[in-house]
Amino acid sequence: DAGVTQSPTHLIKTRGQQVTLRCSPKSGHDTVSWYQQALGQGPQFIFQYYEEEERQRGNFPDRFSGHQFPNYSSELNVNALLLGDSALYLCASSLAGAENTEAFFGQGTRLTVV
Amino acid sequence: AQSVTQLDSQVPVFEEAPVELRCNYSSSVSVYLFWYVQYPNQGLQLLLKYLSGSTLVKGINGFEAEFNKSQTSFHLRKPSVHISDTAEYFCAVSDYDDYKLSFGAGTTVTVRA
Image (cartoon, rainbow over all chains, first blue to last red; front, side):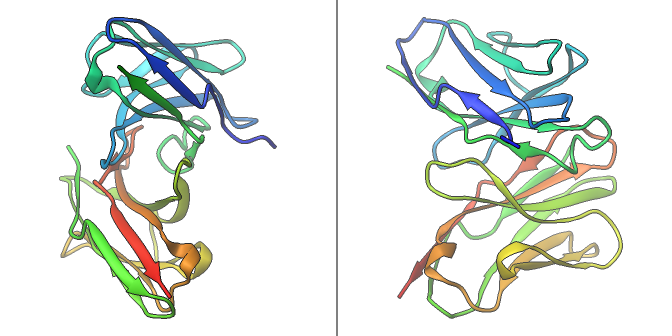
């Protein structure tokens, strides 16, 4: 079992650009959540996808959007990047009904905006 | 809405000494509680969780935590730490009917020989 896999592991982008991060959930999981972890802080919930729909969203602007595919994998898109978007982006997968009790996290994508 | 306060940002400790990491939460409803560990340049690994039942929860690597509803606390303890326990530790809370986890700011544990 490969667990939750994220790509790429590191990424450097220029302010104003757009970025796409990818996540493959743990085998058997159908729900994907995304979190942003700024340096020295705890992870902050961005949104969760289930059945290819955004089911719950945290306090993030519309520049942050996502998608879930029929195979349950997910993408996180961030438009018009700001320096403050530099962070570790974590993907967590779970099974519906255990979204908050059995969440497995990936290794994260380190995004640096310059 | 839930919030989590980790009372210590950094905890230095000597090898084989005990350690306690403090966590308080605020929520108007019943909650689930978690402790995660993050090693350098890695994701989050679940140490233990409280869902219901016994208020003393045992986790991996010799860690345990006690849920105290009256004090809204969920402190993490280990009786004897190792160098390999050096990491960032996060307390998290989730309402019963919520989908997300809300994390504290983290506690950095540094174990010295």
